[in-house]
Image (cartoon, rainbow, N blue to C red; front, side, top):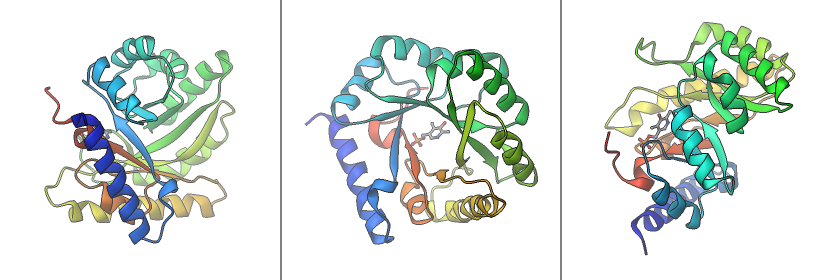
Length: 227
Ligand SMILES: *Cc1c(COP(=O)(O)O)cnc(C)c1O
C-alpha cells in the first residue's frame, strides 16, 4: 500500500473511532485533506485512495492544481483570503473556511452574485488574540454573523478556528470548547449554522470530541511539508 493510502486509512480509522467514543456519528465528521505545497501527483494519489475534500491555502497555487486535477473532489479554501482575490475564489472554491471580515464577505458576495453562484462560508475566529493569526475577534463575531447571514450569495455554514500550536493536543481543547459555545450562541440568536471547522494533524481527535464537523489534516496524510 502506498504511504499516502496507508496514512489516509489510519486517519479515517482514528476519526471513526474517536467519533464513536464520543457518541457521535462518524459521518458527521468530514475530512479536509490539506494539500498546500503538495504536488499534483501526490494529490491524485490521495484522491485515488478516497479523499473527497481538498483544502488549499493559496489562490494561485490552488488554481493551477484545480486546472490539472479538475473536480472529482470538492475544493475548499482555508487560508487567508485577500479581497482582491475574491473574484477568483468564488469560481474555484465550494467552501471558504476563512472569512475574517465583513468587508471580505461583502466582496465575495458581490463576486459570487456576478458568477451566479452561492458560496458556503465559515467565519474564522481568532480565539487566542495572537496578532500573528488571522481571524475575527470574538466580540465582533455576532455582528459579523448577522451581516453575512443577510448576504444572498453567501451561505453561512459555521465557524473555523486555529489555536496556537501545542505539542500536547489537550491544550487545544479550551479553544475548541469555546468555538462550539460561540456557534451555539449564534444559533440561539436565530442564525442557523451547523459546521465547526477545527482540528489539525496533531489534535483532530480532541476537536472531534468537542464537536468538529470538519477536521483539516495535512501532515498526517501527506507527510511533513518541505516549506
Ligand atoms: C496547514 C493547515 C492545516 C493542516 O495542518 P497539519 O498540521 O499539516 O495537519 C489546517 N488548517 C489550516 C488553516 C492550515 O493552514
